[in-house]
Length: 244
Picture (cartoon, rainbow, N blue to C red):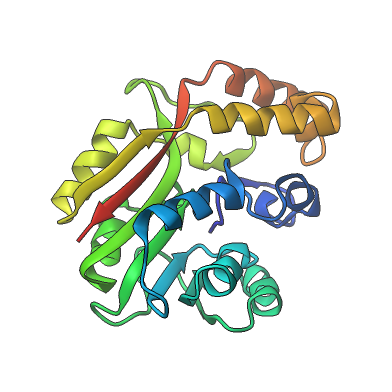
């Protein structure tokens, strides 16, 4: 998963493994990219050598930054063998596991920090995922969370031939309540919806239009319908830092 603002299509490879998207986002596959991760890490001020888990580590860009810029001890988890292979090359110092957020292959209270960037909305259960994140954090540990959210409770995205974080986007109030029920206290919560607009602008600049971008991965009619559906979707992007 991050596995990030992950779209999965009926093509042989899921979209987050497509080279076109990697080239567009610099490999981080989410709004805000590595700069947003760096911002959250500066906010948290982890001690050097602290163990930090990246759930949905993808090709390993955040893992590399954790070790090289912040002198932290990174562990990465991803369900994709292809992503883990890339992460192993980019961040050979990291410990890597194949796994999912709802069943983390980690011991209780083993991390000072957990990153979950544009992954929570892709999990099969927000409640179980948050419970697992709480379990593996040490007392006082921090969860760094970012993802898409839905600005209208009644909205349900109708996206042809696509399964994505957008179709599972939840209201921010529901996400906040889920964190509190899992045992977290909210340290920081911000609306960063401008990052979605920036990503859309990147796509348009690179490919001429959003429709042309989607046409790389599906037929022309489906690309047009997907573009129209996303144009009316009441979506935002948030960041949260929560403390166990």
